[in-house]
Length: 210
Length: 210
DNA sequence: TATTTTCCGTTGCAAAAGCAACACATTATG
DNA sequence: CATAATGTGTTGCTTTTGCAACGGAAAATA
Image (spheres, rainbow over the protein chains, first blue to last red):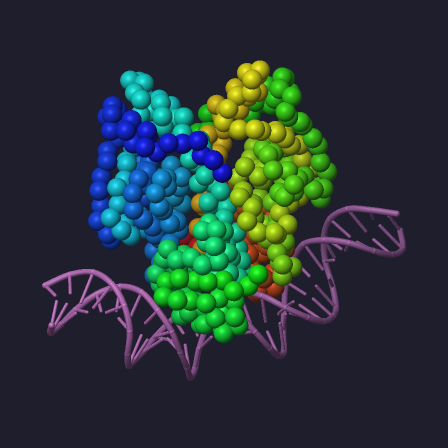
């Protein structure tokens, strides 16, 4: 899908005018933001990788979303219903734009360039987010760990236009992303190798089926 | 969340001007649309209930989304990666607006009133969809059937501002929505009753915990 | 470079979930 | 109204998944 969106221009505009925005740099493992206190933040990851993580009452950790360059996040997208902790963790050094909004779809009074670009681009960026979330739901509705793994691999394969690709997660994190137990996932991964579905060399997966 | 959106005006505009739109009525169990062939449809449910359903290769049925009044659906929101069947089924008599788009965020050349309203309203409608999808992901990432049920009930309870509410699904469909086996779900439902978490009278659930 | 921390890979056992089958109730439909 | 179709509730059995624990590899850190 063509986004019709030029992030470079956007960032230039961003550094330009309006007051209600900030640019911050984080190093690996720092908490970028939590989803409880900052109720009106919109964030854009302009460099690096970060995860939205939830810890539930049973101590389970879930990677709710994985963010890379140009990902949008923030509470606008999230109606918090639970009392679970929701936080964004930097997985590498990150640069993030923070934007404090009153109404994200309306330009500020100054009619600054940043807001203009934002309101023009936001719909498409949000739409991209919707398609991402739908893919995630498709993964999560798969009934078995095997199907989740194969579904995720096939997704990465499509994205990389190749049957061979690097996992963007550690295996521990992958389990938290697929919402399964790590050791059970490792077991299934072994079976997938034994059954000739995949090959795994370090962090790289190669799909062996049609 | 305030949507700043007046569906009635929208529908009036819709019936007004532009060519690339249609209004159709469906009766219960009819297929409203499939997500394979119609690659550029945006649909709005203006009356009734409908489900987006997927049948996977193992014969499992999943209710991917449940639509009610004012829900948006269509392929814009869905990057189809699998060869699974994805179709929207009317669960009651439905009225649906279909809009064939070239670029959903741009007004048509005629600059008709429909397109104007659409492009003004769409961002907020899509944002609502994002929060819905995030809630769904929160449900699906829960590790046990019990937690899925309790999570879903607590959601309905919040929505209805009451500890007592009607299920919008049959139990069969609820299982397909939570992506669990029906008989296992029934078993868990019984345990929840026995353990004093819920009461169930016909289609109505009453939460008994704090 | 030594040491601590995180991650990988594995396993036995327990718990949960899926599958299949059935009877009965409720709801559509000719 | 009779009959078919669909939904509910239940159960025994099998398979899958989760839990806990451990040793070793790899990576981060002092």
